Image 1 (tube, rainbow, N blue to C red):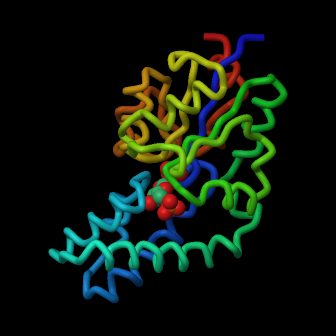
Image 2: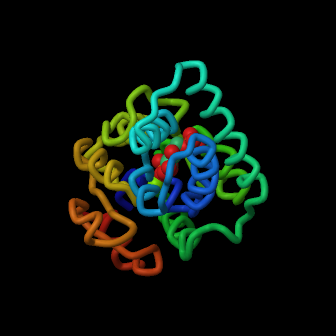
Amino acid sequence: MNKKGFIFDLDGVIVDTAKYHFLAWQRLAKSLDIDFTEEENEQLKGVSRVKSLEKILSWGNKTISQEKFIELMGKKNEEYLSYIAEMDSNEILPDVPRVLNSLIKKQQPISLGSASKNARVILERVNLKKYFDAIVDGNDVSKAKPDPEVFLIAAKLLGMKPEQCIVFEDSVAGVEAANVANMISIGIGSKSVLGHAKYVFKDFTEISEEFIKELINN
Ligand code: B16
Ligand code: MG
């Protein structure tokens, strides 16, 4: 059997933690008198913690000291972690376990490629850590998506060339990162947002066994 490197983003692909990021960022924005909508939250998907706070501050035309910046990031993460602590496997997005199991059966190497510094905790909470041969997250990279660093490290850890890798991503920046890395990008979400991906599916329920075999053999 052929081998490909399968790389999964976390938030928005495996679990929907965007809603918890939103709640935590929203409370923080309120404390700074910044209005912050769910639409604006879309622009924070796949974006690092530092970049997210920079964006929120710029929407509110606010500048703060470096000290305050670090304090606020800590507060946001504390609140976010309190939501994560309540997560369990019911929050895994539809058909993700089916696809992971199918890949395991076919002995395909699997890695995580996430911007989140909390990725390991989340995978443990939802009991999916055992599926991954490698985990690359926000603690392992110096450049955020759309830079391809996170996916290139994942490919290396799996012992695969970039062109042998397939990336599942829900964010614009993540799809761009996969394309720049010369990997096959699969967008999970809507075509209108992720039109730059090689393939786009609404979610994993649309990913058939035939398609998985095609990915492995082509
Ligand atoms: P943390 P992904 C990203 O995860 C999220 O989509 C993004 O909203 C978040 O700001 C980022 O992780 C950093 O997360 O604060 O937990 O380090 O989609 O790349 O898995
Ligand atoms: Mg994501």
